[in-house]
Image (cartoon, rainbow, N blue to C red):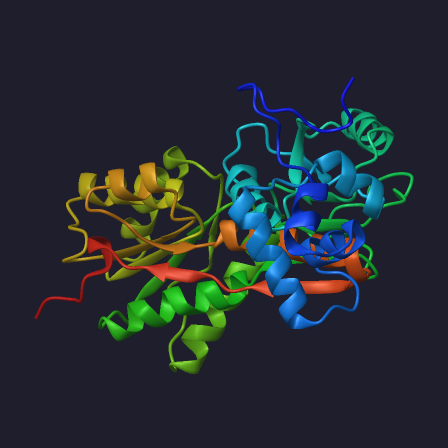
Length: 344
């Protein structure tokens, strides 16, 4: 057997010894130069990197693992089996982890605590360097059971333990931006139709709505309309809202699904969107927002950025130690036709 790696096309694969010989340095110096470690002169590090690139040297993952004690794998635990919230977080996390040449092992718990415990044990047995937990609701969740011996970052749903590292969305600011946008377009009679009263997101978005109206010297039309996260609820709420408050000229909805139902309900009641009533949703879920008639202005929760931030924080925790506390990602408003300025 040869002690040098061999390429599948029959030619010997370039090894670290080849780089060392060409650069005129030791194998240890090559390792330090390519891994960003050790005290080396800038010109030495640059020469080694240039030679490695010239020779097409690809570092061995096994060798890197032996050198650093890391496996360059992390676990990503999803609790949202539909993927509506977890998948964008996953995509963002993979963007960040890719820069660190780290792979994610994805586990779907289907919101089952027993399944979650099983996956945590399995990931630890596989010696992952860390774990990201992606939630589907923003309500605080219990920390992972057993306190894993690796860094853990919670994404979207924060940990109930303030000592943990969590990445969340600034939903209150997102709601304020939505309402401020409606006010800038000339709307003054603004209602809020949202999801179940007990959800943390619902409470936060109600608070943001009220604050934005208060700062503008306005009041919410009626009380918030609490219901389900569905188009059916949106259609029902639109009919009830136009009966009780026929002068309403804008509706901020707690989700895109609700907003799409409200759009249908308003149309059935003879109200035009946006001519008579402007409409804004939350989620910026493209199939729903762009499929709405007219296309829906929506608050994007920036879930990919949540994932990227969580991935970067996890890499930092693996390398330098955890950064506990809550890290906040801003929302962004995506303006479409449903909130065009009031006519006349």
